[in-house]
Structures are given as C-alpha cells and as structure tokens.
Length: 400
Image (tube, helix red, strand yellow):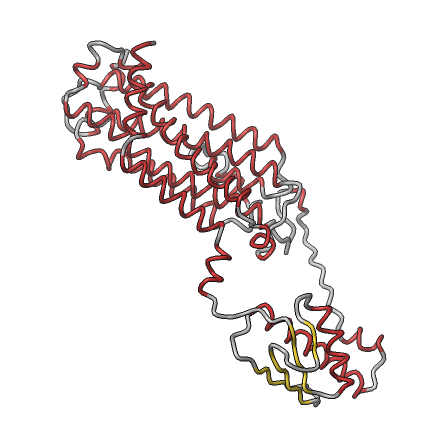
C-alpha cells in the first residue's frame, strides 16, 4: 500500500504542479468569469445609451394614447411635453410613419419598445378608420390554431411534434459534453504518454523490481483521474463563485433560461455521467497505452479513444432537439457513447429513471472490463521489447 501511495502521490503532484496544468486551468477559469460577465462586457463595447423621456410631436390625442401604450411596453421610458431625451415626430397617417431624433445611439431593446408602441397605435388607427369593433379587431389579429396529429404516440418514445426544449437543460447538457470531451482528449493522451514513456525508456525495469506492475498501473490511473477531477473542481468552484458573486439574473432572463422539473435530475445525471465518462476513457487509454513500446506508436494506439469521444460528442450535438429518436436510444446503450448520449435522453420527458440507471450500469461494467484487461496486458507486455502494436497485442494472453 505504501508503494501504491508513493506512485500515486508522485504522479498526482507532478501533474498538478506542471505549468501546462496551471496555465490551462487559469485560462478556462478566466473564460468562465468572462462568460458570467458577458452582458457587462457587451455594454462596454455598446455605444448606445438608455433613454428615460420621450418627447412626441403629434396631436394631443395621439400623444396621450401613445403615452398609455408606451407605459405598457416599457417601464423605463415616459412621455414628456418638452426636453425629452429623444424626439419622436409622428405623421398621423395610415400606416403611421415616424422619425426618431436623438443625439446618441438608442439601445436595441428600447428601439424595439418604441416600435411596438407605434405598431399598436397604428392598429388602433386602422380600427378607427375602418370603423371596426373591438371584437372584429380581435378576430382579425387572432392567431391561427394548428394541431398536429400522428399515429405514433409520445409514449412510444418520440417527443411531441413542435415541443420546445428547456434551454437551461440544453445549456447544462452542452457544458457537460464539452467539459467531458476536453478532459478526455487532454488526459487520455497524458495517461497513455505516462505508460508508454516508462516502457520506451526502460525505466519500468527498475520500477517493477520494487512494486507490483498492477499496483503501479492502478496508481497511475487513479492519479490521472484525480488530476482531472482536481481541474474539474476548480472549474465548478469558479462557476459557483460567478453565480453567487455576479448578478447573472439579468443575463439568464435575457436568454430565457428557466428551470423545470427535469433540471435537477439533469444536473445530477450529467455529473454522474461526466465522472463515469472520465474514468471509462482514462481506463481505456491506459489499456491502449499498455500495448505501446515506442512513443511513435502512441497516437496510433490512442486513435480509438479520440474517434469514440468525437463520435459521442457529435451524436449529442446533432440530435440535441430530438432526444427521443431511434439513433439516440440505440447509441445510449453503447458503453463508449453512453456518457455523451444518455444525458441527452434525460432532456426527453418520456425517459424514465430506470433507463438512465441501466446506462450507468453498462458504463460501470465496461469500466471493470477495461481495468481488468489493462492490468493483464500491462503485466504481460511490461518488459516487451517488440516494436509495433500488433505484436504486443498477441502477447497479452501471457499476463498472469
């Protein structure tokens, strides 16, 4: 156990103290902070100003009505008789035309509010011109109701046509997938390099004389996993700090992000599959790295990890707004795609907790198999001098 902890501690500390780890972590934390202050940063580059008062050059009757309408669309602007921040000159024709004069740029939100108020005034003037009653006008502006009926019920696994996704849950899914892909690509290469470098430099001959090859491998795997979790911890702490220290309520409301009954399960399952995905891919990377005797063969050996992680990410991205389709349901049970695709199925209201738990069991079993074979192959080929991956693969049965 002491030798295991020594190997673990040495690997963990050497990775955490590395300049690449520190620089990458700081850069990502800064990006998170910038994202949390996105609206403030945009305001720095926005030359427009907010207006508080509007002067209307029109008839008294039009001005009085426009003031009431503007109050409904905006809580920040009010109509004044003179010296307004902007001047709206209205030509009371049908349709209404107006010229807005200001000494500065008006921000897009307030421009939209002024336009909405003028549109409402135009509709009111059209009603008066055509002598329409309020009931007739409401019928004219009523929305068309369209119902889509299909022979396939949502209970059979398909999402309802036209159903809008919850965008907060979609954001959580995006973050989970990209963080998982980023860490897998980064640390899969590191653990493969650690193992291949020891074998290619023959340092392993001195190591195995004092520590069991299996213990040495497990210490390496656990250390790299802990390094990735340490980096993930800093990211999560930064996100929590941004949420509590920066007022992001305005930013969230601006993008229409609201929680629903699936938000909490989405967060929980996303974290579970993020951790399982890291352990799975790092274990497989250790397995593949065990086949390598030369550093030149490392990228070729790790190609399956890169391809499978890319495939899982793209499956999630391309099916984001159709989480109940057949391709998603099938690939969510393929172990190497499950960490990427199963959180997508959580977006679908028809996905049960049993389905997600089956996915967790599938990944856990695959992790156990990957670790078992990694230990056997590493032990069997640790002192192999054969060059080439294929020759080392043939030797894995010699592990005892």
